[in-house]
Length: 209
Image 1 (cartoon, rainbow, N blue to C red):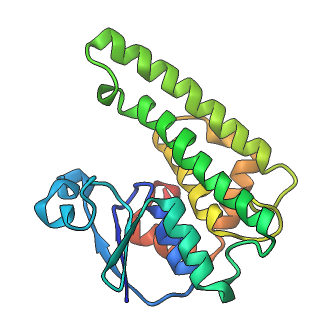
Image 2: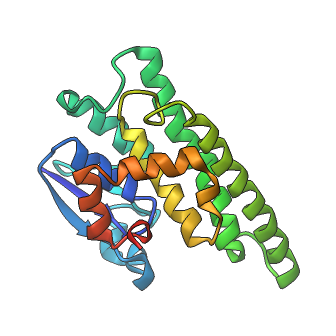
């Protein structure tokens, strides 16, 4: 039995899309960050770090999108959500690691500068640099998508749901996402996928507005 712990609008949308696309039977367990539920005693038993997503697999817990998505791709090979070539698979995982380690933190600095500095002046500086870095990362994603259908090429993979997260965050942050032609076309293709739309509707995503 699989149980996915996620929060609508958070980066956990990547794993939410991944588990839907792989066709697995699973239980949804929302953890509402806006209400502080990630800090609850109950959720601390799932992930003591107080973050989403988390995936319960027969009583054991996997955290972090990159690990969850790699697990899903390998456990459900019939869904063909990971490249079969070993180097291409490693490249897919590396792309997700970049999303997690670089792109996500740049957005946090832009939108949650108080987490990284004390005082108005310092926070303003963090926010400004975070916005510049996040926009540069979005432009890099746009470049990576040039001439491709999906982030890894012709094959839809677990990395694509993760890629979509940041387009939505760019909209939320008021950035001119329409200027990123390749990324916008990718977003439109993603919205044509029924399982992606199911997740976006479930989470009431900004991508549907």
